[in-house]
Length: 134
Length: 111
Image 1 (tube, rainbow over the protein chains, first blue to last red):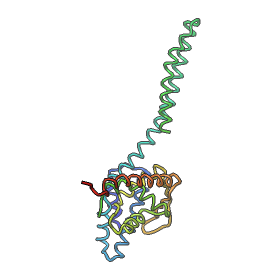
Image 2 (image 1 turned 45 degrees about the vertical axis):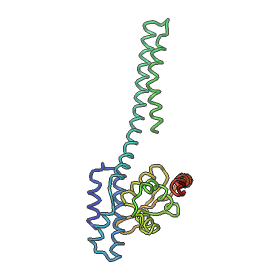
Image 3 (image 1 turned 90 degrees about the vertical axis):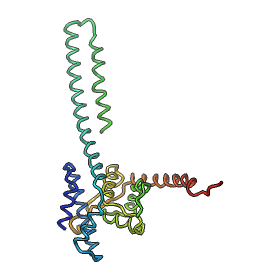
């Protein structure tokens, strides 16, 4: 039974570690061991049974793709949230600066409206990006 | 043993169907597929677990740890309401697809 574990470890070596990977490995080892004991009940030697279970397992490529796809999404999600907060904070600072300069230098003409409208596109774009990944 | 692209394209509904009948675990599903097809189609374990990952991500199935067996706890899969709806749609689509392909594959050629 040791060989099954070793083989699954080897199969998953290239895949980045994650909680998902560990639980999947456990599940596969458990299922393969059940298969091995079934094959042995049909009269195969332990070695034959293990070999057959390993050969029939197939290519790890599909599993790797699925695990990778799962890992990328949450990463983008947290990034999108952080970037939204950053854009809000950044644009507020710029807007405050514009209002201050306007009131200090030329209180008769409210020109700061124009750059404020331009700056608002930044958090707006980030908001929709964040909503997409939420 | 058939390793057809057509079957591979419909693994999701095949597995959903088996899970819909009752909660099952991985090895049980691969055994059941071989049994029902009299070994004409065998699913590779690697493919099976990739399908589980995909279906669970799409929330068509959910999983839980079940009874302890040889070498650890079995992970059982159960279908979600979304999974049932998806399966129904797939069946409907398969029926329509089959009709269309039959027009070209099953009709006698008229010369």
